[in-house]
Structures are given as C-alpha cells and as structure tokens.
Image 1: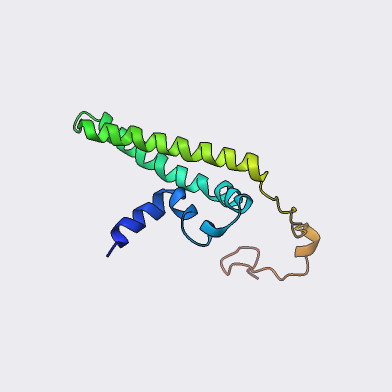
Image 2: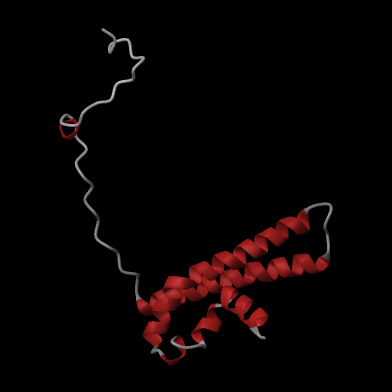
Length: 127
C-alpha cells in the first residue's frame, strides 16, 4: 500500500537508504563508504529533474511558478547530495582503484596464421 511512497523516496533520497537495514545497523565508516559510492547517482537524478523542469519553466509556453520552484529545489537537492558525497569521501577515503588490465597483443604477426577470406567478385581471385 505504501509502495507509491517508498519507491520515490528510495529512488531520490540517499538518506532513506541510510535509515533502513542493512545500513541502519552499520558503523559510521561503512555508511560513509556507501554514501561515497552511491550519492553521485542520487545527485544525478536530482540534477536531471531540476534541469529538466528548469528548461521546461524557461520555455515561453510553460511558465508556472511551481515548476520553477520545484526545479530550483531539485537543483539544490542535487548539490546537497554532491556535498554529502564529498564529506563522506573525506571520512572514508578515496575509493579503491583496480589495477590496470593488460591488453592482448594485436601485432600483425598474430594474424598471419589465420586464413583470409576473399570475396568471390574480387578481381585478384579470378583465374
């Protein structure tokens, strides 16, 4: 019954996730790591809503005041989530970086042993 309230709260607010299990029982460092890794996604969602509504508000066809207010609120919430991510990164440290992966050798010598396909209409192929 409350799914229509829970879904937008979970989609747009990082604070909602931090108040529900398993993060509700986690220590401060684990919560900071989670926020460092996920608050950017929430900020992007808020920025998209805010910018989209602001562009809609700035058109000459739609100039309702509530659209502009909600747009500014969306941009402010995006900035709040980015600020929260920066503070969480200061507490938890930078994210781990995976080591680089070696790419396979693509030299021309590796392709010499493979048969080549010629087109039947190729003039060099005709006898």
